[in-house]
Structure formats: structure tokens, C-alpha cells
Length: 390
Figure 1 (cartoon, rainbow, N blue to C red):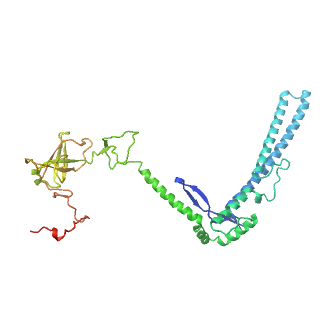
Figure 2 (spheres, rainbow, N blue to C red; figure 1 turned 45 degrees about the vertical axis):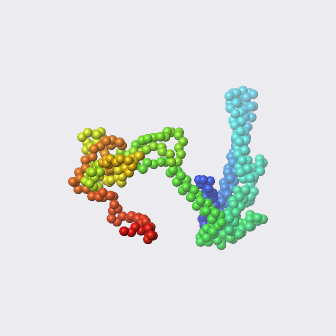
Figure 3 (spheres, rainbow, N blue to C red; figure 1 turned 90 degrees about the horizontal axis):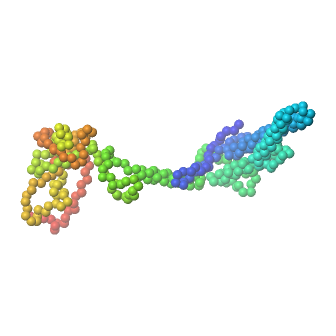
């Protein structure tokens, strides 16, 4: 009874990027004290199946030949009876057609038999088509190829098997002797793990995995994902245009993450603190009131942040009340029925007597919260000669 003793295989599996993943595998079967490779075992079974197919084809050929003899006799008898008009012309034609069909079947089945012999690497033999050599299994090219492949695989994993100048029986005996010593699980695992081909294929596998990871990363670059939901504005690209890295393609505007930049006079700032509640009236929606809070102050006035800031140190100076942008956040995103678009005019009313709420409430600067990590960089200390003295 055949049983699997140990399994390993050598095969090449194609991967992406032109790489190959290889792994070893030998399938061993034990039978009557001999160790038989799986490939050779399968080749022997294939030869047995081909021999059985040949014998079945020969048996069918003999049956077709017997039917041909019977059809020939029926036709000869019909040829004698047609002269005396004992049978009709239709019956004569039917006997002749049956004879022709029988001849075609014999010819076709004969070719099937010769094809089966060719699969066994046997020459054509029309006289004795069922004649098969007794050592057909050892002489079959498939069995020889399987045995050679097995021996080559053993050499690749470091087995001291000399393939050159050895007969099939001597080679099989030498391989059986070597495998009988190294067939244990631990010895086999150690042998396979240290095989040069295994080490090479493992390096190729790691390289293929790295190439796969790089390809997956490059694939993510083919999609530009928006950081938030919104609407496209200022689109400067159309389908079919060529773009370059760093080119502005479009602008994305959110209708939920919106805020108000209110320009308050500098004389009004002493009453404002972060967190104070604000009631916002939009000119686009009369009667609708939006709730918000003061979120912070700009570090500079609007005039200083303009394209051409004024230079008060030159010429005549006229004092002008400056305005400072104040950021106002909404307590809730504007409803979809009354969306606030960029550039709309609003009128904010700050309740400076109400209690501030939210982050940094009651402050004018967004100072770090207690417990937060802040990195500070101190300026280098100047030498004593550069220190200011009273």
C-alpha cells in the first residue's frame, strides 16, 4: 500500500514585475521498501493507463474487424441475390452502405490503435498491435524524464547523487540509499532550508514583495483624494489636458466647514475675548440667525496684510482707525437649506457680556493648553560686550 512519507516540490510560480517565486517539493511514496518519487509514480501510472487504453483499442479493433467480416458476407450474399432479383435494389444498397461503414470503422480504429502505440513510444505494428515489451515502464520516456528530474532536484538541494554515467537501476538504488538516511522530518527541513536554490528564491521573493509594495504605493498616487467633502471651484483643467507636478488644477470649497472673518475696529477689541457667543445675520437669508463664537484674532490688521501696506514713517501721517480680522466659528454647520457661500456679507453681533465658552475661552491669544507638548527654541546668549547697559 502506498503512503506519503515526505513532501517537498520544485516549481516556478510567476509573479508580477517579472519575478519568479520558487519552492521545492519532492513527493515520496514508499512501496515494498523502496522510495519512489511522486513524479515517477505518476509517470508509471500514466504508462499503465496508456497500456490499458491500447489494449482496449485493440479489443475494439477486433470487434470492428469481426463486424466487417459479417458485413462483407452479407454484401456478397446480396450481390448473388440481386442478379436473380430475390432482393430489391434498396436492400442491396443498404448492404453495400453497411459494408462501407464497417470498413471506415476498422480504418479509424486502426489509426486509434497506432496512435495509442505512439503515445507509448512504440513503433507502428499492424500485424500484432497489442504486442508490448515487458519492460515498457522502465523504457518509457516519461518515466525516464521523471527519474532524471528527481535526480536533478536532489542534486540542487545538495544530495551527493551522480547522475552521469549511471543506469536507471543504479541511479534509483543510489537515490534510495541516500533518501533512506535523510528522509526524517528534521533532516529534510534542515536540508531544504540550507539549499542554495532555496536561499536564492527566498531573496527573489523578498525582492518581489518589495516591488509589489512599491507598485501598490504608486497605484495610490493615481487617485487624488479630497481632504474633505465639498464643491469644486476654480477648475482650470479639462479632460485630456497635460498637467505637471505642482500645477493648480482646481479649488475645493466646503459648505460645512465655514467661518466668518469679521473686521472689528481696534477701539472695539477691548470688549472681545475668545469664546464669546455671536449671533450672525446673513444678507442672503433675511430673518435667519446663525449661532457662533469668537475663535481668535488675526496677528495683524488688514492694512498691514494688504498688497501695498501703508508706510506711516514717511510723509504726513493721518491717524486712521484700523480694523483687525476676528475669526468667528459656527456652533453648528449651516443647514443645507441656508448654505453660506464664500464671499457673502454677514453682520455679526457679539454678546461680550455673556460667559465665554469653548476652547481658549476668556483669552485673547491661543496659548498652549496645560499639559500639551510645546517645543521652544531659545536664542543664543550674546557675548558680554553686546549686552545693553544702563
